Structures are given as structure tokens and as C-alpha cells.
Image 1 (cartoon, rainbow, N blue to C red):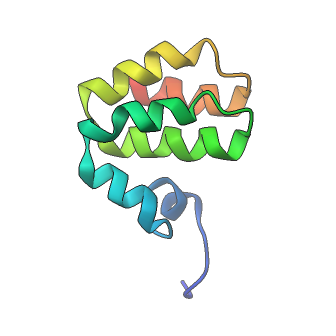
Image 2: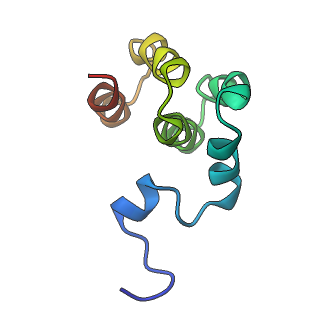
Length: 86
């Protein structure tokens, strides 16, 4: 696969997003800031925040995703969140 090719797997792992990967590395201390991004009116911001929380793979991050699930207006993003918290 060539450089610059974005696949769903790469996007989900945040391979092309150094800032998001840094938030994942920070872990739970970054959760409050990332959680605020879930309130954005911009779907792309909520997607990115969701992927950061999923990649954190912590109980705190999953709890935030659970709380956000019923408030998420995008059906596709709700499906991604549901798949992670189950």
C-alpha cells in the first residue's frame, strides 16, 4: 500500500494523525478535553474524538463513549461507538 493511502484501518488506528496519537499516548488525563470534542456540531470532530477515545482503550474512555452514545446524531458514528463499548 502506497504512502498517503488512507484505509479505514489506518484511519481507525490514527496512523496519519500525530496529534490524535499524542492524545492517545497521554491517556486518561486527556479524556476530559477529548470528551468536550464530542459535543461539537462538526461530525468530523466527533469522529476524531471517538477514535481517540477508542484507541485509548481505557475504562474511563469507554465510560465517556457510553454516556455520549444516545446523544450522538450520526447513525454511523453511533454504530462505531456501540461496537467499541460492547
